[in-house]
Image (cartoon, rainbow, N blue to C red; front, side, top):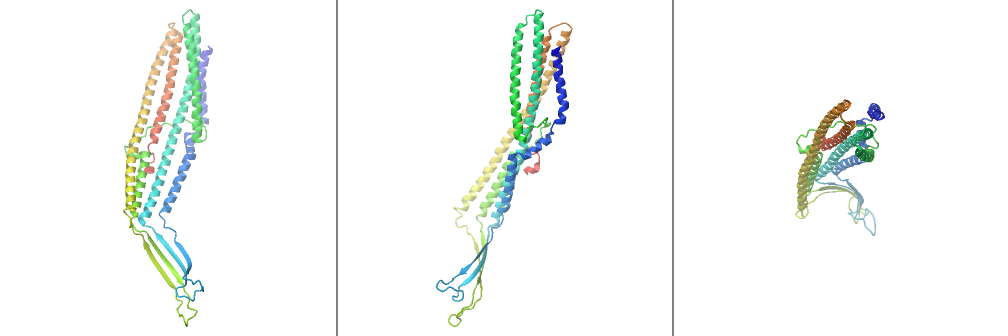
Length: 416
C-alpha cells in the first residue's frame, strides 16, 4: 500500500510544481533580451561604431597647412628696409587627394563596418539559439530526472512484488539481485544528471548573467530557406568581403590619378630706408602654386598594387562560394537532424502507447488472477525509459532547429 501511495504522490507533486511554476517563471523574451548585454556583442557593437567613424574620416580632405616666416633677411645688418627681397610671409596650402581614392577609402571603411554589423546580428542570433538549446536541454534533464525517480520507486515496488512471489513459493530469488543492480544503474544515471544540470546552469549563467527560473524554450519552427545563398549570415559576411575588395581595386586605380596641392603666400615688404642710394618701393607680393603627382614609376608601384587588389577580389569571391557550400551543408545537416529527432519522437511515442496497452492488458489479467504483478511493473519501467528517450529527442530536435534557423538572416535588411 505504501508503494502505491508513493507512486501516486510523485505525479501529484509534479502537477503542483507545474501549477506553481508559471507564477515564478521568467518569460523567454525577458531572458533573451539580456543577450544584448553579452560582452562579446557589446565589443562588436562598439567596433562597428568605430569603423563607421573611421570611414567618415577616410574621405575627408587633409587639414590645411598655415605658415608664417621671414624671407631673405640679412644676417650682418638685419632689417626689412635694406634689401629688396626681404619680406614677412604668411602662407596657406591645401592638399587635395584624388576623389576616387577618397571615395574608395570611405567605401572600404563602410564595407568593414557593414561586415561587423552582419557579424553582430549573426552572433546575437547564434547566442539566442544556444540559449534555446540550453533551456531545452535543461527541461529534458528535469524530465529525465523525474522519470528516473519514478523508475526507482517502481523498482522498489517490483522488489516488494518479487519478495511476495518468493514467499508464495515461486523460484524468483534470482530476480532480486537483478533489480538491485538495475536500481544501482538508476542511481548512477541520476548522479550523472546532477552533473549535467550543473553544467547547463553554469552555461546559462555565463550566457545571460543568471540562471533563469522556470523559463522554457519556445516552440522552434523550422524556418523556410528561400534558396538564395545570401540568406545565410556567413555568405552575407563573405559578400561584405567582396565589397571591401572592390573598394581596394578602386583605391589601387586611384593611385594612377594625380593628387593635387594648392598654396598661396602673402609677402609683406617695406620701402627702402635709403631711397637716395638704393631706392625700391614697399609694394607687397603674392605667390601662388599648384602641384600634382605624376605616376612616373607606375610599373613598379601602382601596377603591382592594382594586380594585388584584383587578386584579393577574386579570393573574396572564392571565399563567398566556399561559405555558401559549407553553410548550406551545415544547414541541411541540422535540418536533417531536427527531422530525424521528430521522427524518433513519433516512433518512441507509438512504442510507449503500444507498451501502455500491453501493460493495461497485463494488469487486467493480473486482477483476474492470471500472471504476476511483476510483469506489470517490468512493463512500466520500460515505458518510463521510453519517456526519458522522448524528452532527450525533443531537446535534440529543438536545439538542431534553433541552430539551423540561426544560420539564416531573419531580418533580410541586415544582409543587403
